[in-house]
Amino acid sequence: MSEQNTVLEQLLAQALTEVKTDDLKTLNDVRVKYLGKKGPIQEAMKAMKDLAPEERKAFGQLVNTVKSEIAEAVEAQTTALEQAAIVQRLANETIDITLPARHLHTGGVHPLQQVVDDITQFFRSMGYEAAEGPEVETDFYNFEMLNLPHDHPARDMQDSFYVDPHRLLRTHTSGVQARTFEARGEDQLPIKVICPGKVYRRDDDDATHSHQFMQIEAFIVDENVSMANLKGTLQALARHLFGSDREIRLRPSFFPFTEPSVEVDVSCAKCNGTGCNVCKQTGWIEILGAGLIHPNVLTMTGFDTEKVSGFALGMGVERIAMLKYGIEDIRHFYVNDVRFLQQFKR
Ligand code: DAH
Image (cartoon, rainbow, N blue to C red; front, top):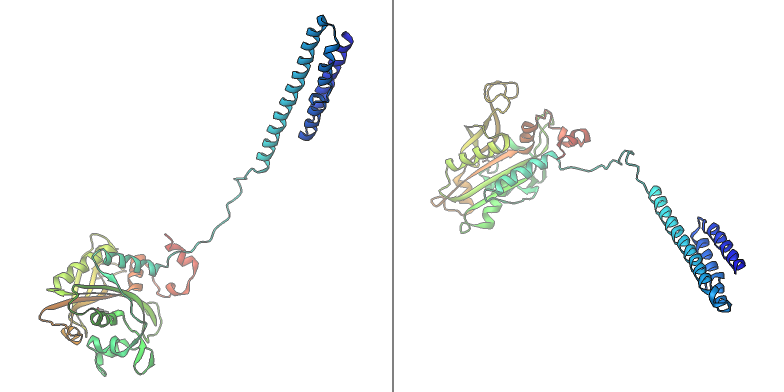
């Protein structure tokens, strides 16, 4: 009996040393070796039946104790090894947050497009719809239908690039007027349209001129459209663009397609009208041209000027952007220097 006890105690001591492996597979082998069906514990249990009944109980208890101590040791080591593996993995997968982030180069909306989007949104909010016209335009829509017949001296104000004798790169976005009037007709009133787009002129390029630039044309045709409607719209536009305390001033002017015609000035946002270098000491800055649509323009598309009238306005996008952001040279818009463009990233 005591001999068997000693064997069991040695077995336990032996098993407990073997359990201290740091390899999970070896650990499993140890478990099978001691606790498996053909292992020494099972053998000892089988041997119990040969013992005298008075020895059986104590021996049985010892076998059970040895068995559960080995099982617990295996269990504890398994857990320890699994924990260690997780800790190891976490350490390996640590992100070094002290590393500088990789810089992502993203683009932005071009400042001219931002101004176009902004003004388009402003007019949309008042019920205007956006339209487009062709950049290669016919003489007919670019000039004739705007009350600028062949050989009219006012054509000299807008010299252009001709593709052939009847087609040219459009000199303004006003050509969309007659195109829209023809498409819609007098039975679809009101006509409220805004047209942003590229235009071209045979011009020498300098700090304020470019042979290609952008314009936004806006016009409305309805019953009883008056100068008061135009003025209210211009006032709202000027305040939207340059601040809620801006005033506008209308000066008589001439455009072949409007009568009366006006140049529109906005009170200088920098000096608030007292005079500074931006407004050339006048307190006012010219921002666009406008007027009531000339009766000739309306009758040419078959509108009855006894019934309908309208106003139109046209502005240069570059000019608005230069005033808004204090840009001193128009050429900055076209060279795509990222140092310039980045300043407009939203
Ligand atoms: N088309 C004119 C230009 O390019 C701008 C303009 C002036 C448009 C008066 C208009 C307007 O609709 O009423 O210079």
